Image (cartoon, rainbow, N blue to C red; front, top):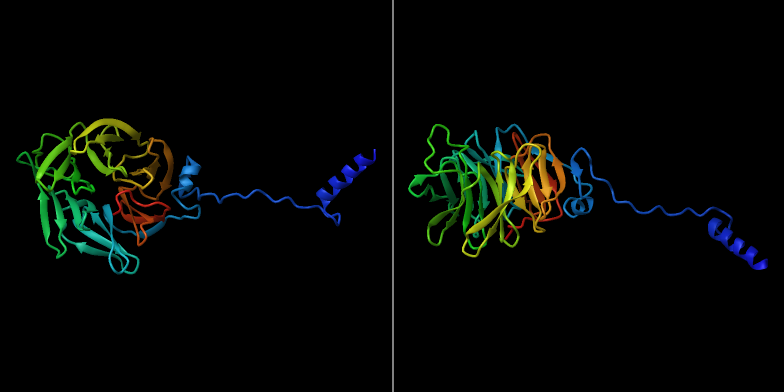
Length: 326
């Protein structure tokens, strides 16, 4: 019986401590929750890899008309964001010190923007052109026709690591002009040869586009009917195949899209933005007061996502960078 009392005494010491005071058990550590007014989390483990738990949505500017096509440009002062205000026919720029200023007016009814391999601005313009801004400010037309037909209204544009320029050309910005091309296509411009090839011809209204980190997959948003994002396998010669539905947007429609370094796809949507895993599963949402039209990674360290959302510009800090960052 003596051993049993010893066990009881040991148990009491463990429970109450040497002085007979209860020992508080440490609560298991819990990670802070995301702000439910700013984010909807579907896959928490994946979401925590992308956005800090203390992240907040910041409105950087408002009072604009309809903004689109953001791209971050680095410079000696830390860099700045360039984006389009389509109805105003202007390219705008934003930086933390000066806020929003006019970058170029008129802009050819600019929409999507990106940078080429030399860091020069490449712009999709609703006036029917893809242009490049040279270092001295000269604006050069890269392409404005396909098969002797004038382009409709180039919408978004990306540049691959081989220098090829991929762009979409729906009919949104035609206005009173008649459409000359046979349809709303996705094109690839090989600058080395000057050849423009229609690579996707079966979409209703191809809109935003981006490439996976390995550039073996092209993602294209279709803002027609149905509204979804589709995937195409990219071959070494630039041809594409496939066209499977990657994700269907349930609020609004997909417009601008970006791929992060982990292969996740970020898409603008009617509720702000939605984030999908490489497998096409919804990870979560960034909830904005206005539906977003486009988004871009940027900031001095590349760890901010900027959203062009109708009349305003918003941002959030993130933990990942852009797959296309060079």
